[in-house]
Image 1 (spheres, rainbow, N blue to C red):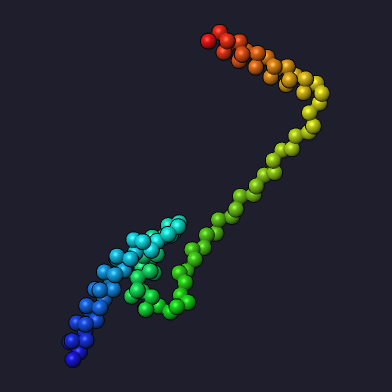
Image 2: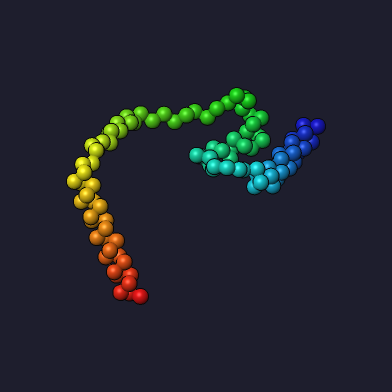
Length: 105
């Protein structure tokens, strides 16, 4: 009797593994897990029966001190003279662009 039960259990596990292999391809969606080995073990039906339903993998703790973010340097308002210089340089740049375009055509 024990031998028959063990053979039936063995066949049951083989069938469950085959079903899991067939359905696993269409089951996974979204972002891949961080640790693929642990995720594949956790999804197997035998693993789900072995552990408690509220089991969680331990979170890896890192003790790295975060680097402080430096505040960006704020610029003051632009003076009228600076605006005039930028305007003049932009006009010259576009004039050169139009001249080169006209000479290339």
